[in-house]
Length: 535
Image 1: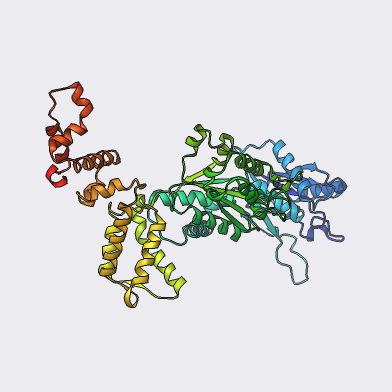
Image 2 (image 1 turned 180 degrees about the vertical axis):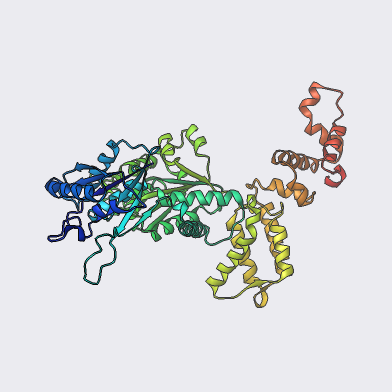
């Protein structure tokens, strides 16, 4: 393989000494004197005013390394310290260069050139526009006379930007990513593999992208908390300087919605006694979190889309646009594609939000994460109330057994869990949560979940009343819903036949000889149940 080096002519460092030119360390010349790094070709870049010096360097390289071919490239720079000019011209140069990595090894000498040039070389090499390694040169030690040894080439080091080869750096990067992911999880040692994988993806998106992020999932799954943690992560990395602005779109209606989001001018509507900036303006250079975005009206959605795409909007009653550069995080517990089909959500806004969509699972779908979240909620209570509260072992075991079983519905997800821990900690005698405290709390939770008619989780509650929780967990969700409906019907009738006639009313008309009672009995036996135990 041939060794090819790219570099700038050093307008100062590569100058010849006045009396003894070869006793002066000159990086471009000394580069070609290393026996263990033979340079077959040097691609030397110089400015229009440095052609004479470049030709001297070519002459001196020929004297110390006759086998090295030097190609001069004149790139005129109006200002070698101007980043935009330097990057543009270097980028054009390397894009037009005919690289052949199969037969040549490439190096970029970052010893010469301005600091701006060195940064541009680094960026182009890191992005693999230049398939090379970086080369750093340093002079030999001076002799007692103060001069350099004319026979010494100095030293060099090669920097490979494939960071995976640097175990120490790779370990540090992995640790930093772990810290960032832990930060997004509020330091909770979550164990659910799917949730942890999602957090890893969100961490990458939060650091690398300013595009809108859509967080979906049931109420109480932690969308608001995660949005704030994303903001805090970006702020710690100095990617945002503005505030975190949160608004629940479900509370916005009519003129209030437009005014709250986009602001208004004085006199824009009845009661507008003074101007208002609006939350989008307040979120400038920060993060705007629109929770329950599916509740916004179509007019507000259209304004939001424009604000996202053009970074500008019109306050209510104003004919002068306002600008605001923010990153949007949206949250919803609704099926937005379904709302699009119903004409209640703009398709173009969903398309804009849908680049990064993450669905947060319900707490009951992350049962292995309940224990660390119990510890987190208890610690948070202790910090807020400046009071130390702990479980005794039996009470903790009882609570976790219930919480992680199918009987633990957690209809409101983390809100239920947080409220539950707060109640037990508040009622704990002498700062100890006892078995009695846990029993009372489990009774409250069962009653609350069972009395909530809007909760689809009542299916699991109904099953847990007649089957062990472990058995319920082994039943497919499809079969759970069917079995719960059968149980509810059985409880309304006094006999197996009457319940069977109700359940099989349609199929009986097609097959008059069907034995409804026998069909129902056999269905219940599949789950180890008897009608007498349900009626």
